[in-house]
Length: 213
Image (cartoon, rainbow, N blue to C red; front, side, top):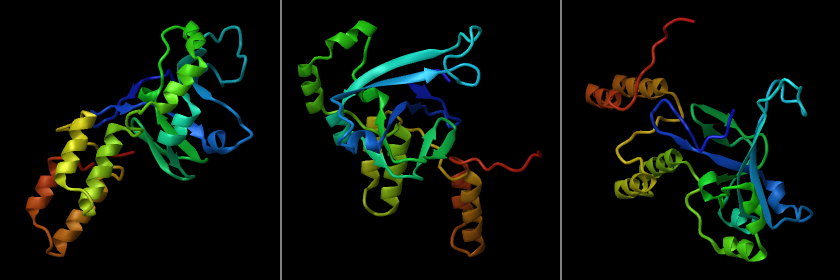
């Protein structure tokens, strides 16, 4: 795939691009570095370098750079088996990952901008305060969860939605909507909720019946 700054989803809310570090890249003292230059490789065919003479679809995207100290301070560490989302897909990490979002990199306009990365530029970046290292959707999901757990209020949720630019939009849940409706129907059978709650759920979630293989 080509590198994209945002990935579409069927709930109409784009997911911002992120970059991943292996935890050992930052915590292994033998791997000495001041900065990381982030790239994305789109390959052709079976992805075996150097490819064939007819495979002309190889692209190396040079995305930007960041100081090691800022990644250590601001990146989000996720242990093995943590779930991550990209557009319409989810998958579990097989390694110990640190997520750092594309919007927080120092951008490059031309390749010669690499020559401007001086010791002073690195020191300046080490002190820079970046933005959220979560997708806007995940930030909203977390806020929803913390409201449900009694830690945050609905006002906090509104603040997160406004700051992330998805005010008035409803991210799809990680679990399938059919599972939500199953719980609501079970609660209805127990006499705990009425059809009112189920109808309200239908305004924000879409049940998906089996339509054939």
